Length: 83
Image 1 (cartoon, rainbow, N blue to C red):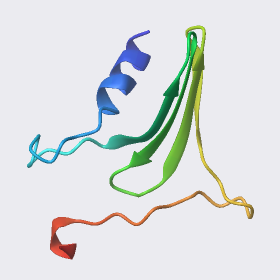
Image 2: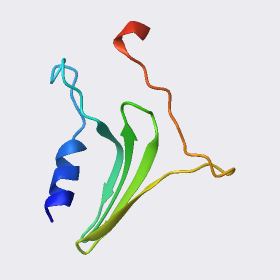
Image 3: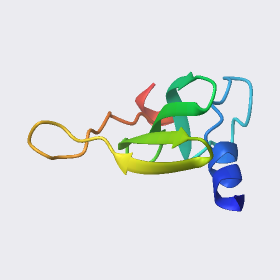
């Protein structure tokens, strides 16, 4: 259970005024929850790779999202030097 708790801690999206010098490694870009299930799409803030996290009744899994060719879905990552 400690791993899931740590994953949830890492996946809290940041507000602009929070943690200016320390960013979260994984950011939740989509979340849907119901009674016993939770679906999230996470983005690695260093690589841009997107992951699907799904939990049902206390068990869950994490997998990279892939495109039709089987390659991971990567969103461009912008740093401060890009602005």
